[in-house]
Structure formats: C-alpha cells, structure tokens
Image (cartoon, rainbow, N blue to C red; front, side):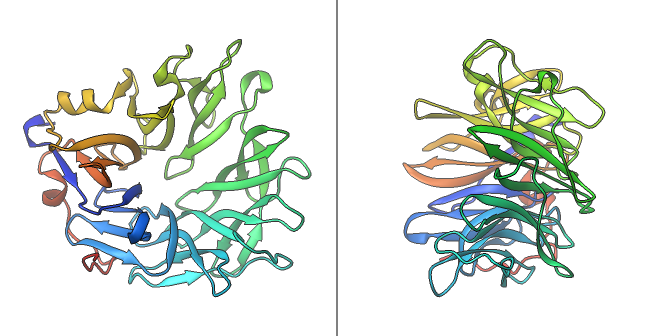
Length: 345
C-alpha cells in the first residue's frame, strides 16, 4: 500500500465519540456528548447528520444504512431504537411484562435486514438479551443459567448467528446463539471470558480472559472450529487492551487500553501482534494534525485498512478516521443512498 497516500481525517464534530464504521469504511456512527448530546452518522462524501432523538448510538449495519441505539420517551425512559437510511428514528416496542423506569432496553448491534440485538430490563431486576425483526418484533434469547443477566452485542449479516454474554455471581461468560439455542463460548479449562466484540459475520469473537495464575486479563481471539487464541500471555499494558472490532478475515483488531485513567489506542495484526496506533501511523507516514491526542480505536473496515476512533483535539473530544490506502477516505468513497447528510450544527 502506498504509504505516502495514507491519511488522517478529523470528523470535526466537537464532543463526538465514534463507535462504528461501515464495511467499506466510508460511513461512521457514534455519540455526541455534552451540550451537543445525541448521536450522529458521518459520511466521507457528505459530512455529518444528527440522529433525531438519539441518547446513545451503539451499532451500524455493514452498509451504513441502519444505526442502532436508544431514544427517550415522554416519561424519560430509554428504549431501543434504530435509524433508517433517511435518518428517521424507529423506537422498538418492549417485550410484554416489561414496565420500568430508566433504561427499558438498548440496541447494541444491527444488520441490513434490519435485525437488531441488545438487552432489555428483566422484571425483577437484571437484563435479558433480545433480538428484534420487523416480522416478529422483540423476542428474548435464552440464557445459560437461571437468573443471570445477559446482553447480545453482535449479529451476523444473515441473522443466523448472534453473540453476547451473560453475567452471574461476578463472572462473565460469552455466548453464541444458533437457531435459538444458547451455547457457551468453548474455552479451555472452563475459565469465564468477557466478550467485547465480534466481526461482521459474527464468526470471529474477541474479548478478555483471565491469565492463568495471574490477576490480570489477556485479550483473546476465537473462531469456530479453532481453539481460543490468547493474544498475549503476560500482564503487560498491551495485554489488557480491549478489542471492539475486527476486519472480516480477523487479521486486524482495533481497540484500546485504559490503566490508571491513561487511555491508549492499539491495533493487533496477525503475525505481528500488538502495535500502538502512533507506531502504525508512523509506519504509513500518516501525520496526525497538531493538537490531537489519540485515545481509543473503536472500529475497523472489512478489509482492515480503515480505522475509526476518538480522542481530544485541542482539549475537546472529537472523532477521526485513519486510512492506510491510496486515495484517502474522501477520495475512495462515494456517498451511497443510505444517509441523508446534513451538516450538524
């Protein structure tokens, strides 16, 4: 890849934190904090649009057509919602029997059906994982243990595979749902593991697992028909990096670490291991504009060549896209018919 053509693009959205990127790396979605609170969808070709009524944004479909998150109703209750190609919000009805104040449900991930997965308040306390489709509405996903709190965090493009986790007695266990059946993430020695993200086909999972004999945790990568792969086996700062997103082939993971309040963005590359984002940018001769402090990576394109995240620009939160390919983000993207792009105020 011609390093001289690589680029750094600031979204120029004060208060923003990017959380997801489309498969082609052309569309980014995330949250707006502070006075500009809400959600946004950004296109390399058309700029930013505010998402009406958003109080949180968690996911973006592979095409960028749909955004998943939550909105508030008239009683200030938080309900799962999605936004369509025109930017219109579609709050989801809750499951029967769920009456609650505060957070009723949250959408965590979405595909292009659209099929939505997330978590909803359970009568009596705790949460349950759910899936939603236009045909069937919201339905709970079975858990592994009675009384455990669950959450679904990823759904495959075809909707046949959902991934998430459940927590009970302080222990978190990853779950794969296939054909309505909950299967625990198969891990040697039966140690619990936190699942923090999945690839777009939901076949590649990653998260944190305790290191045997140590108080620290290590990042892992797992794929069907393969053993769980610890990405580091010593409690170094990089080992505690939590990865949120991966390329379609699983060779590039994007995430970050947070120790003692000090954040750092990390990339993991198959055959190489952990690479600090500043070192990767230096390798591709990507110049970070003055005033930027890069704090987190949260998303990666399908081919692993575009990364999105957030940091501080002149002391204020903002989001960015890093492009390691020729042409840069704007040059390689055309605005698809998935987003009504109006400049955010």
